[in-house]
Image (cartoon, rainbow, N blue to C red; front, side, top):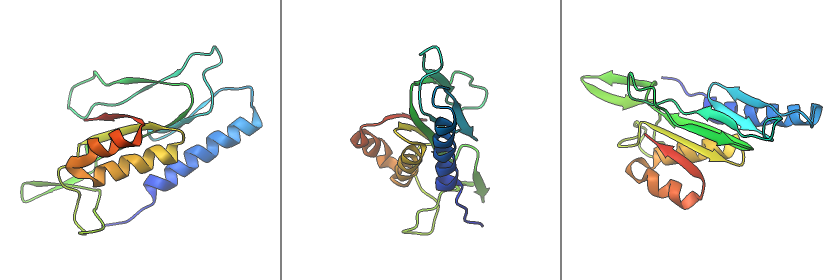
Length: 148
């Protein structure tokens, strides 16, 4: 077992890189993507939104959602790729600090769009920890989200 800061650390790095790029070249549009954690500060140079794909968690299904982003962050949390099977039972890599055990009954994947990548990532993780109440938590946030 290991504990890492991949969630919040990477999202903070994405936001920081996007801010730095915007300061260096304020007239240039760019999308910063660190392993699926994304931030954009302005639309593409032609004024259209960036188009970001959300990978589906179903094997062989290539019909993932395409999300238009004019600005803000996008992050995904889930256990579709990071899990362990022990004695025939699937365990998520996301641990509930209240119990010390993997999150139970959460969606396989949660993607959120927010003002920053840090905000989006925090909401995805909180929603994973909410387990079966993930959708209600996300609806109360007022942010766009996608559940799988």
